[in-house]
Image (tube, rainbow, N blue to C red; front, side):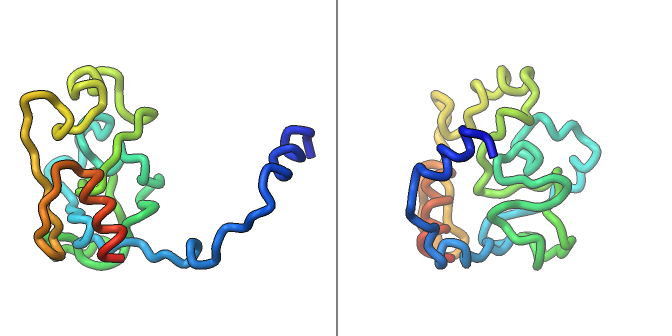
Length: 144
């Protein structure tokens, strides 16, 4: 064990709460997940695809949305597709090509672009939000 690793293990004496490790992933419908078959063979390094999301785990999983169950089109694929999209998307700067970052306001999603008005609705309770982040936090806190 290196000195750095030894030092890091001494940073905290607190444990992660057990309930934090028991959180369940969100259902595809809750996250408004859908597979966009027309983009299956597209360049997934551009656009708001799951492939470009910080939560996407290659080859076909998501850290916060389950692989199981139907999507918003009632289609069950058993995976989170790289060509899928959902309301919880957050940009992964390591996957997005430089050309797509320039063309999408430096990697920001539409709601933060000037002169663009966007609103997001919770599918469970129809509450409206001004950003994806607000919707994501609402879903996590209210609809676990």
